[in-house]
Image 1: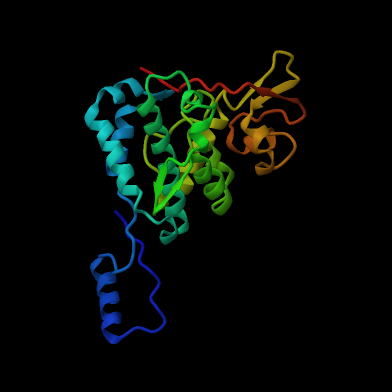
Image 2: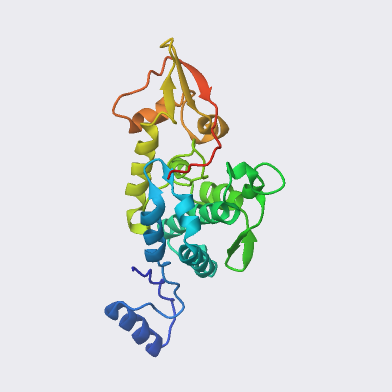
Length: 257
């Protein structure tokens, strides 16, 4: 586990300087610094239940111990102050938190056909303040739209957060980390960009149909045609001169056996 050391204060006592330097030399966290969250248990859970094409929710639901393990790590993560981490570590943490809470909600209400079925109103799961974070209660929408896409904006984040639905970009089978975040976001974007969930050329050859993500968040992507952005991540470019159509978003659960 890596630990981000704080910036040394401008004026400290001689003893304070010795403690700070000792922490650096020993590799131990300096007093007052918050360590990077431990993702080892989360990584084990992802490796166990995330498959090509989706998540084995049934297997996870049948394991009481692994449900408890997920609850325990969310309880531990609730103590994290994202603002105390570096920008990349904070971004990685919030992506992991979003995805873990989404899984936890599915398991809590399992069996379900769609995340739309969680709560009294459609899509209530995204709007309810169900996430404990650093003394607050926040929603999935707040994590994604109010923090990640506002404070740490990067269009590739759209392909890292997972809404537990078939049309969502795939859930990564390993945790995001600050040290590898750029590479991981690149990999997830390329994976989605090459998939039929991102773009399909119509039978007429003159229309390309795109994920509705690019319609909902059109301001996040350059150009009037989603191909302009996607072609940066595809081996075979999409025709930018084609008409634009949309693929109906499939909100059915991204479940695999």
